[in-house]
Length: 253
Ligand code: PGA
Image 1: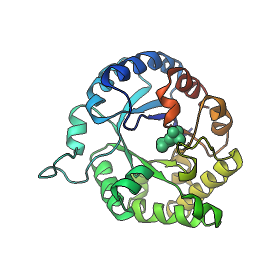
Image 2 (image 1 turned 120 degrees about the horizontal axis):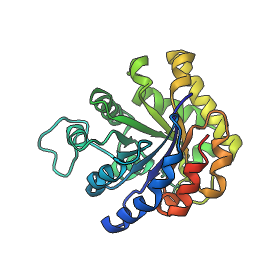
Image 3 (image 1 turned 135 degrees about the vertical axis):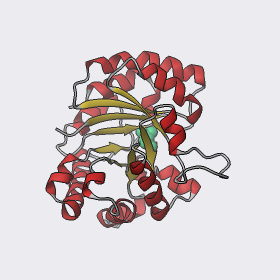
Image 4 (image 1 turned 180 degrees about the vertical axis):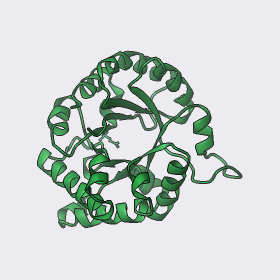
């Protein structure tokens, strides 16, 4: 069975102390997860080491960086390298979040380089894709997402592709309280899997976890995760509330 994942994306929120409290409140809820399930916490960079330390006691809890740089080292003021993450035992990185694409100009080609670095360095990329509202309104969402996948992931080998986690996050659903319907989520997730199958074969496509993101909360997580091609969620706002995220972890199939 594919990994079922509840991933928290704290974005630029919480103080260090609030982050500690939140992890302390949530982590015990990961103790009940099985071998196919995990919780991942994408915390702000200054909290990564603290989060790694706290999750050490929980076999099903992992830490992700929210971003990193594709270059190995050098004169890139303000950036974080894969080696740095490795050295503090961070095993996941979120790449291509729509906020990085929109506010920091990250292109599909730039993200392809980051994906390569992540794979080479054995840090699992949680690769985000998803269309803006006008694209959805025109019915062109499949084409839009397919190009994102092709331009940022399809240089990978099948073996490498199996080490990628994909998060489908329709931009119109992020932070808006508007969630994709289960039908919309399942339809896109099945489409993404079919695109992977066309390129890499069905066996590889079946192994890739595809998370849904966009206003996932305690009240809708179980219904979304029950969709056959939805393998969990990437959660922003609701991941900042212990009681919400604990329910979301419990909703994994
Ligand atoms: P949201 O954010 O859950 O607050 O909509 C999701 C995300 O941006 O990953």
